[in-house]
Amino acid sequence: MRGNKAGLADLKRLQTQLNDERQRKEAAEKVAAVERARLSTPDDVAAFKRAMQTVAPIKQTPRRAAPVQRPATAAGVSEAIASRRAHAQGETPRRADQGVSDGGDVAHLLSENGTAFVRHDAAPDTARNLKRGQWRVGAELDLHGLRVEQARHAVISFLDECLEHGIRCVRIVHGKGYNSGLEPVLKDKARTWLVQKKEVMAFSEAMEREGGAGALLVLMRLPGEAVPAAR
Image 1 (cartoon, rainbow, N blue to C red):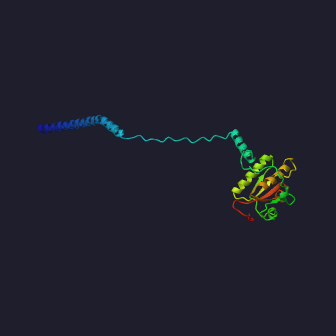
Image 2: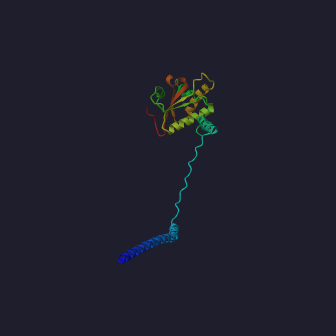
Image 3: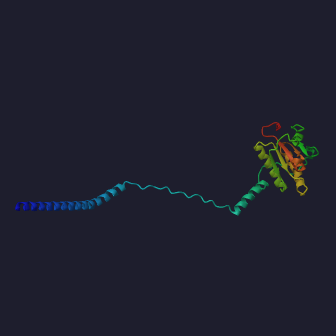
């Protein structure tokens, strides 16, 4: 009986020792883990810092602000309109109308009671064919409201521009003179200017549906062209 009690006591002591040993081991592992964490933290930080030394920051290209669209001012609009109007009315100084005068009597060069003109090297019936619409009108100029100087410059510049663009047949509206004492002057001056323009082969008063006595149909010879072909 006594031997059994001794064996049981030894077993309890052994269990107690094992428990204590296990607890000490667990405690030691916890302490070691904490220590490893404490010791490794500076190393990790230092390693991170060393790695970051080789990293260059990304350069961001600064974005350029889009230009601000400023609203057009009334002054700017008025200036642009005035500039275009001055150009249209012949107020911009140019050399286009040099050599073309306002004076001179051309009545003896006209035909059809002063309503037509044919250059000497063109066919005699050119003006009549022009009036009948044998050539298609490619552009038109309206002289209403212009002074003589403005109208002269407008006519010569208009003809030159048409020649540059290959337009040989045009209509010039000078007015009939019913509402203004100035327009009959332009009617006569237009004929004077056209006769002096060597590129003009013929002109004729328009048919009534195209302006009648208030407009002229003009036929020009393009550069390098002998006689304009009917179109």
